[in-house]
Image 1: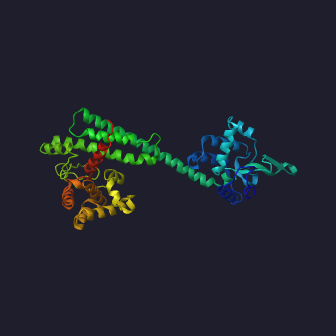
Image 2 (image 1 turned 135 degrees about the vertical axis):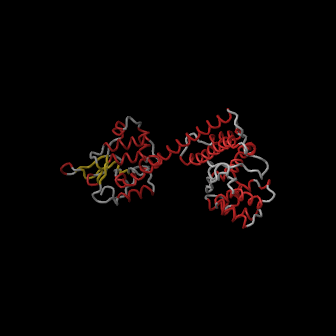
Image 3 (image 1 turned 180 degrees about the vertical axis):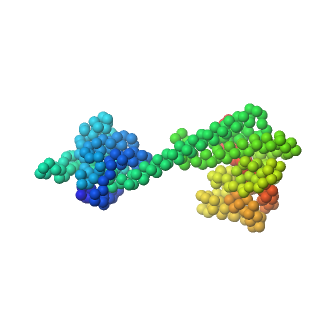
Length: 404
C-alpha cells in the first residue's frame, strides 16, 4: 500500500507530528475505494478558506492532478506522481520556482498531499518487468482520497456560509438604505422629533462595519440597524396617529421631542408596529405579547450590567437574568415587584429593564417604585422597552463625539 508507511522528507525539510498523523491516516483507506479526482479538487477549492490555502496553491494542485493518468484516484492504480519542478511550473501557468516550492509546502501543510522522497530527493518511478511501476517517489495524492468525504463536507459548509454572508449583507444594505431615506424624509419635511441624535447613532453604526467584514461582524450590526429602522418607523407612525386622533397630539408630540428626557418618570409611548410594544387603546384595543430585544442591543445600551453577571461577562440571557437579580437586590427592589415585572413583561424584558434602571440609577429615587410604575404601564399597553434602550444608546453615542 503506497500510502501505508510513514516516510520523512529529504534534506533539511522537517516533518511535523500532524504530517505523521496524516500519513498514518492514509494507511487506513478502505480497499477498493476510489473517487473522482476533479470532484475532490472542486471540493478543495470550495473549502480553501478553511484549509488555509491560496488560489496559487490550488493551481499547483491542479497541475499535480494532471500528471495522474486516471480520472479516479485509487490505490490500485498508485497515487504517487513524480513531475519535475520545470514540468509542474509549465502546467501551473509558468509559476516561478520559488513560488512553486512555497505552494507545494502549503499543500503538504494543509494535508492535501504528502511527500514521498527518494534517498537522493529525486522524483522518479522504478519499473519492473512489463513496464509496471513498482515504486514511485514524488508527491503522494493519498490524502485527497482519504479525506474525500471530509473535503465534501467542508465544501458544503463553505457554500452555506457564503450564502448566509450574502443574505446578511444584502439585508443590511436594504435596512441601511431604508433608515437613511426615512431619516432624510423626516428631517427635510420638518417632522417633529430628535432626528439629529438618531442620525448620529446611524452614522456610528455604519462606522462599525469593517472594510472586509465577515458574517459574525455583520449580524449584530444588522440586528441594531433593524431595531433603528423599527424605531424610526414607530416615531413616524406616532406622528401620523397624532394627526388623526387630534386629542392626543400634544401628549404624543411632547413624548417624541423628549425621548431622551432628563426626567426618568417620563416614558415614550409605544406603537403597534414597534417590536415588543403593546398598542394603546386609542390606536387599537388589542394587547400583544412583549418581545425581547436582541441581547447585544441591551448590552450596548446598558454595559454596566456586565459587572454583576457571573464571571463579569454576559454571554446569554441566563447570564443577564442572573445579573438582574443581583442588581434588584442591590437597588432595593422587592422580590414581589420583580416577580410581577417578570409576569407582565417576560423574564428577558424584566432583566433588560433592570439593566436600564441600573444605567439610570443616579436619576431614580426609588428603583422599586419605578419598576412597579413601568409594570403597570406595560400592563395597560403604555410602555415599550425600545425607546428606553434607544435613549440610553443615544446618550452613549453623544459621549463619543461622533462627527456629523
